[in-house]
Amino acid sequence: MSFVSSPRAGVAAGIAGVALLGSGLALTTASASTPQPPKTVKATKMKRPSGTLAPGSSVASGKVTGQRIFTNASNGFALAAVGQAQYAVATTDGGKTWKTDGPALHIDAAQAPLSVSFIGAVNRNTVFAWGGGQVIDTTKDGGKSWYQALFTSGSPVAVVRDFSGHLLAFVQSGTSSSTVEYVSKDGGRTWKR
Image (cartoon, rainbow, N blue to C red; front, top):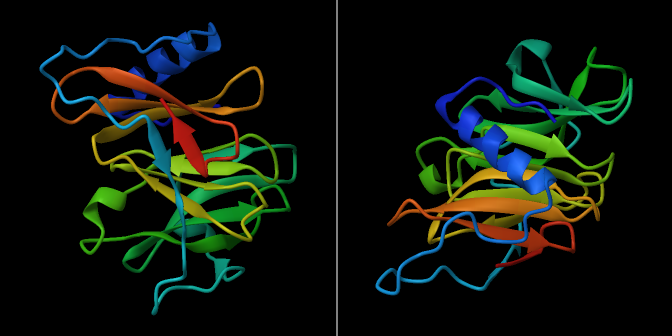
């Protein structure tokens, strides 16, 4: 998986490298006086906000921003900014055409902590988005249903797939510089520290 250039990209790439080495430990530990992050974060099913594009709506290539992740030569995913909203978009023709792959993931101004700026995919069915906010948005059924996990104690700085096919999230605490590892074995619906 590749990352776009940004100040967080270097951090995300470094953390992803640690994940690929199979680290099962938190990168740093919080002191006893620091509130501990939750042991479990449960995602909620996302609904299409009124006034946003319906899933399957065509999106102009010029609206597709940032990285594009391909699971094979034809099938890929990206983020698109249309109006005041960001969407996960999918292609089945190698990037010639794009369609929304679920509900709007973020609406500007109205949902500041729900911002996403990176997208990744395990395969054609399991896709995830994160970065710039406190959420990780996931689908494990190719975009038919999306779930949003809100990390109230920090912000995800990287999400990767581990060797078992599970999702790993590295969440930086909002109150300290510690980074905590969460794993999801159910495609992003439940995250455990």
